Length: 273
Image 1 (tube, rainbow, N blue to C red):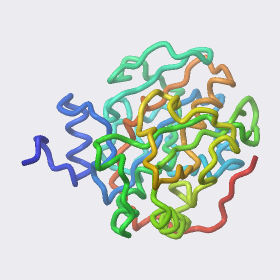
Image 2 (cartoon, helix red, strand yellow):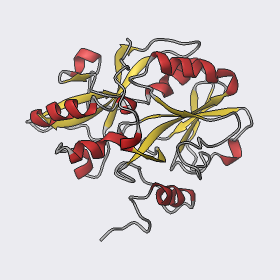
Image 3 (cartoon, rainbow, N blue to C red):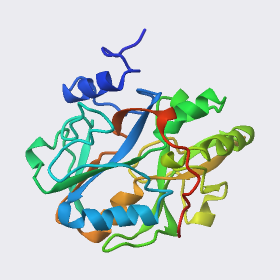
């Protein structure tokens, strides 16, 4: 029997549960047929530079939507969205340093803030599962781990820094299938950027993930498979030392009304390092 008091397949129901404080867990596995996204909120003065940074690094930072200044929603992603309350947790950065992890940012909202929703690999996990790929982290009730690599992104304005990746532990046959499937979803980071030998992309220790959460252990028959990750934006914003920047906290993503199958399957993205 489900322990949820809301319809976990409905993105609107998920957002209401988060808004009302009835759900504070990670959003992986919720609204599985709908797009989830990373959240990045910056002052208007830095928004165009940040968008250029995303355009120069589309594999890690595919832009699903951008708000108008002062509007806490991206209407094309969900009509009833309120980005001040509908994300289960936020991280607030001031001058590049994390200072708070609130469950609401209503009291921090300003007329000059611009929100970006960026593609997230949570969105294609249900697609992978339907294709027969076993995702052990979901079976075990956790999320994919993230790591900071030694690969550098292409700078734009004050935004620069290393690529962050998410890792899934997959058997060889599942890894091949996952590559074949995910390459058709560039708005969710596309195909992996690397598999096996994490040290080749500058990851020294799988037991020390960025953010300190997620599945980090491998079974003897599994390979680590790495996808570009939207958390790349957090490190770039920290390096830019913005006076204020707000992101989602860990795996609390923006849940949208957009069906996964509705996004264009473009093939024009590519990582730039």
